[in-house]
Length: 303
Image (cartoon, rainbow, N blue to C red; front, top):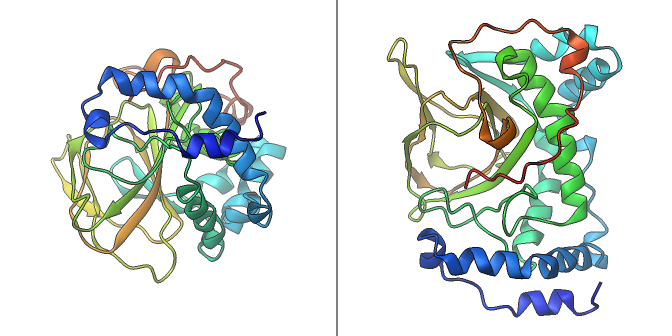
């Protein structure tokens, strides 16, 4: 690895925001051309002394969820302990405490240091108007390639999200081998809203990363139930998560004050395949839920 990779990456001329939002071909070329440099830069950055004090590990998770997850990996027949932690707050939308609110400062400090690293990092410009955040999965251009973060991210997806999703939504089994994720930072006066849409995912996990006492106004997630036509805006507290099929229509209400921080994580099948709602629900054994697919990444990125 070049000893100057970090400095070199920091001095690269970045694409303009307009070019990124317009999907200019030069932007795709920029990320591909500099991918090896940025990966080396993130390794160099992470090995710096200032980052040695932060560890992204199991202590970040809510203790009750962590215990239930570990118990289920040891004995899948005990998986109901995980299911009981999730409560249906809207048709086919479930909520639970995911991260320990008392430990969120560790993750947020890490992400703040990432933002200050000076290494080009692709924001989720598939999200209209969003200026903050980052792509998290290696399938994405300009992703957060820091090795410590990638270890944490893959554990989150494989050990936590996938078995939880399979437990709550059995129809996604077979459509959950591929991972995708990004972070979002909603800012009042800048990132005002996200119009109604569905996700190109089999299942979506949305985790609130705001710290206790870090208040904001507005910015609820508004869900629509196609069957009953019911519409409801849901808010969630620091460290809590909402999980739902990607096909559930939803939107983000305008944020009017403060900032909101989120991880948005997707699972889907090869080349973006998602389950057909008309298909019969599969019957699978608990041990199948508590397993990791052997499929390699297909490198397909939804945006």
